[in-house]
Image (cartoon, rainbow, N blue to C red; front, side, top):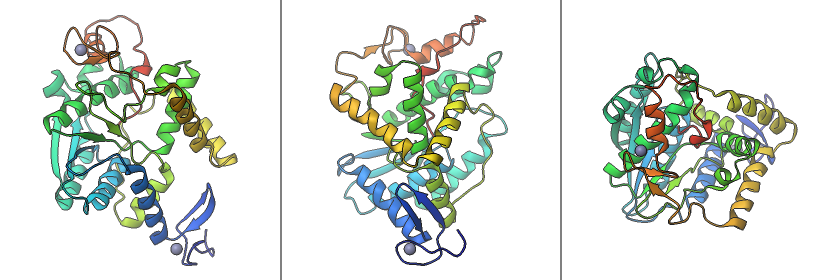
Length: 318
Ligand SMILES: [Zn+2]
Ligand SMILES: [Zn+2]
């Protein structure tokens, strides 16, 4: 990158992007990302909305909160509340919780913390005894529910999560590889009255690389430990395949997501009203008689070797 300037102003570039090909200086990178996220929010958030931001403290959710705080500051009557889920992962959560608390207090954003132990009676480490390999799946199912509970408690009208372009593209390909088209076209961004609050992913147009460099030039990058349970087997392989394809054919991830959106447009909104049931055990939303939360919690006591299907989780809720 040395010696080459920003494609827009000639100042020293901090990032080289390939879709489309361009180099950007710090100012133009930030402006570009903020503008694209702003456009992605168009029509998604209205005056009077209460937006619950899933804040793990990691980089994606960090940038999400910073950008939403900036972009919505001028919106009349939009209220932000950050929700951090404490899964109870020893040696990992402490630092990210601190980072989340520091950021919210500096921005002056309401911050709520919900723990697995309070919501589900045990922390993740305890729930994963004898099934560590299912860590991401169990955690994903429970974290999704925890965020819904936190958002409902905060009277949120929208939930925003920090999924990035890479996460989204991986999820599309994973669903395709599993032959699970219904899950691939599932779209929760519009919500479903009485069932769930709309969930939006404003960063899903930004690559992991753009997010990392944005935080670095803002002086907001915090080097945090990786989750000890990170990475399901399939997601790890899909991540590598897509990173290789993106390198050789820039725009691959964006086009993959666009293919999914085209299928969504053809089949129409899913889930439809009436397709969601109430779980017989906990009353939560379920696609069958028993919700995925009750299933993963029950299995903690059963020493059956049955794998919980990874498709129960949408993607990693950052
Ligand atoms: Zn520039
Ligand atoms: Zn249930």
